[in-house]
Image 1: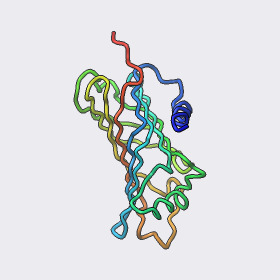
Image 2: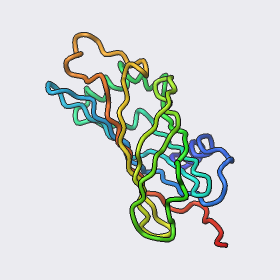
Image 3: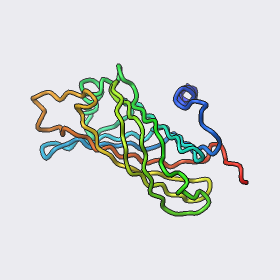
Image 4: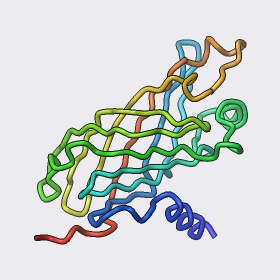
Length: 189
């Protein structure tokens, strides 16, 4: 059943517009920090799905909001019920473009800094995002990416009640780490 759900989500999320040379993961890591000096607030999700096309630079990732884990169970309940309303808005999705994709040599190991631009849909709101991203080519079949960016909670209509306003930051720092494998190899010329 779980496998069927994963395949269904992948089919819905990743449309057929991608060309050859796709890299995929279903265990990307998305974490966030939104705490203050009064309270540490961190969530982590190790089941993000992501795909990018090395030929076009198209990239998408999605994460189920209920998949975030916290050190305190109460924080997880409040996150899903009060703040992210995960029953109403079950996933967060990024769709975008890796700029200067041609600067990444998928045949040579190394680190390749790029810029990623696109839209982040979260809590029913879609906003433009641009961030620096580091791709690392380990070999021609294994690539990782890492990025961090900040979002204003109010931009995504995430309301913080006055009683906890000193404990929750107005911004959240989101970190994304993915370790991809080749889904479809790019033909060599």
